[in-house]
Image 1: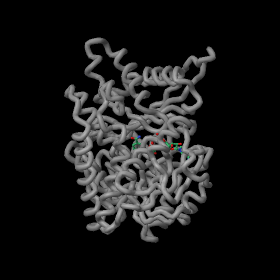
Image 2 (image 1 turned 90 degrees about the horizontal axis):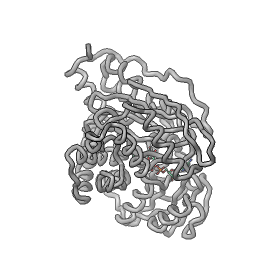
Image 3 (image 1 turned 45 degrees about the vertical axis):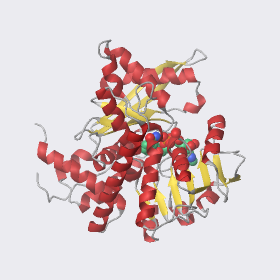
Image 4 (image 1 turned 180 degrees about the horizontal axis):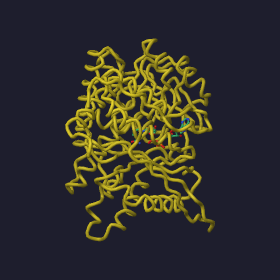
Length: 439
Ligand code: NAD
């Protein structure tokens, strides 16, 4: 295997999937981002070939009986991108627009995220194409259990470990775990709790997992503020997406003195220049399902949201939300990608040219996978770590990787996304070189 061969172009073999929002093909966006780093480090051609497509793309169609007695067929996905560094790992997304190319991109990002943070996991992602908000709790349970059963041995605590993502949560993971446990046989039940992470603490989850991704976002913002002599106290922040990632990021940033002046979700956008109380807003969302109609802020349009006066923007909703139009409206000095793949490459180039810092998803939204790793370790060892211990370990790891990416970007004079991929790719490449390619 030579080290100086030019990598072959990494291309998607799938035509773009029509999307309600016409977002474009996420896998092609991911490919473009990775190619840039691959060229910079002169990634070995063989390694590039292996990484250009996932190892496995699993599609399952499974029937579920609905509350009204009718049977419905669901389409489920699990994409396993790479497992050279450890078991496949990644979330399960429940969303009406879920599609294979989206899963492929998200699975690839998990590979590089784990590699960047030196977590012994590979990359995977999956989900079901449906709208969970339109289903009863009983239907959600049956859909989740039937999906888990349909996946069979394609998941497992040492093979592929799902976690929550958009539209799924702790309860989803508990149902997945319970279904898996019940089919492995009674002697193994308790040794397979690590088949999923992001479970409730009572079912074997880790303290700190719930807020982990938001906490990781906060640590990156604190590091950036320290590096740039920026005072977070009183700084204005806008957040798109107020689910797991966005709501915890908001609460933790408010604790550091930041003022949340705008929030948006699938139901609408709101603003208050005096600040929105994220705890009260979380209570409102828990009751109503959306930030819309929150009494402590005014309703605004999506366009007005992006133009708000705020130094920090945290996209924490879906992918490809920050295009050229949004980038041109944005007043922020810092974009911190809580969501996976929220920024179009052209918009990122524009922002970087304007001097806006863009902290890439694989660096800053990794708190979830880091604490998932701690949960998996606790399950393997039959341990329960203290909350403060988990959060301290997370902070340490986020700061360590932050320093590595900062150093790499400065040394190679590149943007932080390219630096983050480059570090991950180099680790994967080293592993392939040491192990060779079987047979
Ligand atoms: P979630 O389902 O808890 O919340 C998603 C939020 O996005 C909701 O507030 C929803 O209303 C909003 N949203 C959906 N469509 C929208 C739209 N068109 N416009 C504006 N808002 C919209 O999901 P989550 O777990 O918080 O994940 C959010 C993002 O963070 C995703 O990109 C996910 O892949 C990424 N992420 C999540 C984790 C995790 O630990 N949960 C870890 C890493 C990355």
